Image (cartoon, rainbow, N blue to C red; front, top):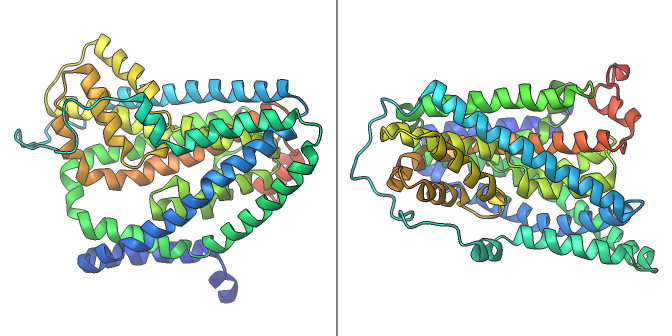
Length: 406
């Protein structure tokens, strides 16, 4: 039993997270010094993301029986992303008004966040230029369409499949170091900011975590329940990947593993190759909830009353700017700043209030984004009838496979 436990990645990641919290709390300097473990682990995993997006989208498009099917799956995915992320934005705003986490929070009127001024706005050319993920995504779609029309596409695909095998094999070796990444990420967060920094903004943090939990179990759970799939069993199936996401505060760290797991549970390789990489840029449920709640929070801190037109403006701006946020480091503050600049009534300097606790809420954002992309892929696969139901049964409930129905 002990031997089996010590070979389990979940055990080591959990142990690393616990050790990181203890080190960060009792020896903050050591915790901060361990930052490179988490930072470099994520950096190495990021090296795999763009090649995997390129490979999986090209093979996904070429694996479809026709370009019409590619268009259908792509259109359904984008429609799904827009509906669900907009719902997430609205939920965040509604909860913000009901719970009112910003009332009673003390702030320093002279506080300034130098990096984010009231002139902050989105430069779409720079946004696209800096977002390599979206560039790779678009290139892969064009390349896949062109390749699918070539007569000798099977010869070219043969080499792409070989490359894919080696890329994923290398990734498996890298993932063995996930506990070290989780240790460094958690120790740094606690060591730098300290648990005590959470208390003044605890109401916002609690609101964000509870809202995202309800979104996962009610909204995403409801989407899976449409096909009689349990969200609890789905989460349990992805437990190793979720622990890595929690430990590193990054959904990127487990994105390639998510694609493998979804294929293993029966989702068609082509659907996984199209939906997951696209969702990585366009289906950020957790980020959407956080952004909308953060803006309402700051409005309440500064006692700014937002009328309906301003609220709708916030939703409209976030519907656009939140897309592709995963591809740019620190994009959350840029998006918040640009949205507040568009509304022009909330002091942008208020972002200084969020800097201390933002890192502690990144786990909730990353987990929600991660589960949201998994649910989207399962939903599209089931909707297109491109799923192996037998493998789905065995993956989610190996002892009672007959409980998952299509």
